[in-house]
Amino acid sequence: WNINGDLLNTITLDTAATQLAISPNGNHLYTAEQGKIVIRDSQTGNFIHDALNSSMFSKIKFSRNGRWVVTINSQYPKQVAEPHKQIVKIWDMTTEELINTINCDTYDGYFSTEISEDGKTLIVTCAEIFGNNIKTKVYDIESGVLLNEKRNLVAVFPSCAISPNNENIII
Image (tube, rainbow, N blue to C red; front, side):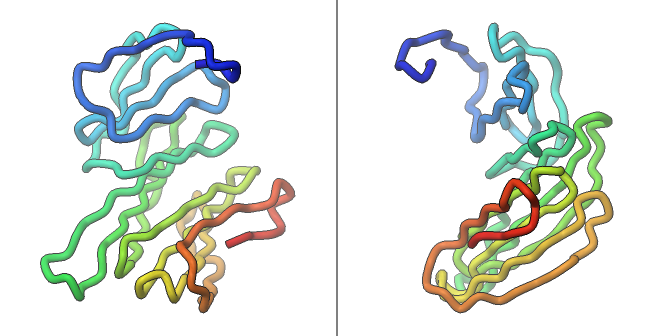
């Protein structure tokens, strides 16, 4: 669809897609299908190739420069009182290689990520106890090093944004 509501194209997939994303340059459509990301031509929907074979993804986020893709998958506990495992994987799309894996425990599954405008920093927010205790973590994308961590005592669902100048984080 375009912004005016005109149907531009319909793309039929062979399997169900759990997530969709468009590359920053608009040339490719990425679909999460059966544990892999399928790259397609965004105009025709034609298959280009599979990438990033991994476990099932619950979310996909691209850096604005198109180099990095962050995939998130949830692993649910056997007991209700145990935390969910949110597995954040950082991939380099130029090589399609896994660069880093970050584990985040969250008790109620609410989770958000954002990549800085310059593609150097990953912000992760997750709710620890039913949305009342939010952790915000800042990571270096290439090294996976935790740069900063803050605990925010707010009663909201975690969501985050980073300013275009990469100086301010909003949760």
